[in-house]
Every structure is written in C-alpha cells, then in structure tokens.
Length: 160
Image 1 (cartoon, rainbow, N blue to C red):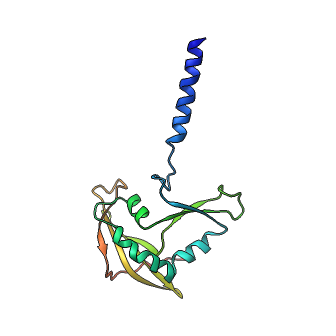
Image 2: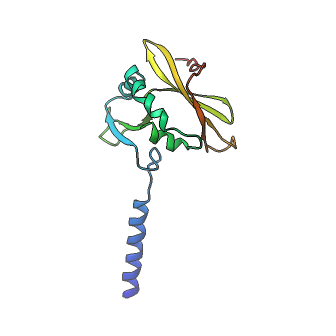
Image 3: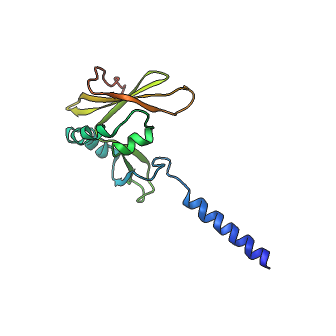
C-alpha cells in the first residue's frame, strides 16, 4: 500500500512540476504584458502610429549587441494580444505586437532587420532598425548585431 501512495505522490509531483515549467511560446520568459482585444486590426493600428513610435524610441537604448530576439522583445516591451472577436476570452488567436514595429526584412539568410517607425496616412516613415544575425541559416538563433539609427531602407511592398 505504501508503494501505491508513493507512486501516486510521484505522479502528482511530476504533473505539478510539468505545469509549472510549461512556457508560453509567445512569452517564453513570462515577462511580456498580455492583453485582450476585439480585433487585431485595432491593436495593429495603435502600434503602428506616431505615438507608438514615440514610446518605442527611448526603449531602443535598452537594446544591446548579443541580445536574443526574446531579450529584444522584453526591452521593447512587446505585448502578447489575444483576439476575442468570435471567441471566448483567452481562447482566440494570439499575436505579438511591439510599439513602432513596421516590418522585418532579410537582406541575407544570415541577416535580419526589424524596421521601426510609423504609418502616416499609408506612408511608412522608418526611424530606426535593429539588426540581427545568426550563424546557421537552418536555425532561428538570431542575436542583435547592432542598431541602425539612420536606416535608408523601407518595408517591402506587400501584395494585397
């Protein structure tokens, strides 16, 4: 009987430990703000405006060479948003938003740039970029290479 109780205790501890160590793939470090919105379009509009860019501008000082993507998202105060349109709270699709983030470009398989700025009447104005690099094009291990405070590139045109 004692072995049965011991087995039950071990199973309970394993279950609780497993739940405690489950990580949100969108927030693996558990440091991002989480919000509910009715529609992603509203949240995206707010994070692409001039005020959002003004909030993002001083945060760029927190970004350092060698940071991972998750480190940058924390430094830039990314928000994990759950869309509730047509779903119960906390059960809808989710996306991550960063104030001032416009787009990402990949100049090569080993380089990536996140462009920040704002959308003013359909015209995107780029203010700064975070440059990432990786050693292996087969892995997503991006690290910060540097910050470009005077970028000359734009977001690529998207077909709608």
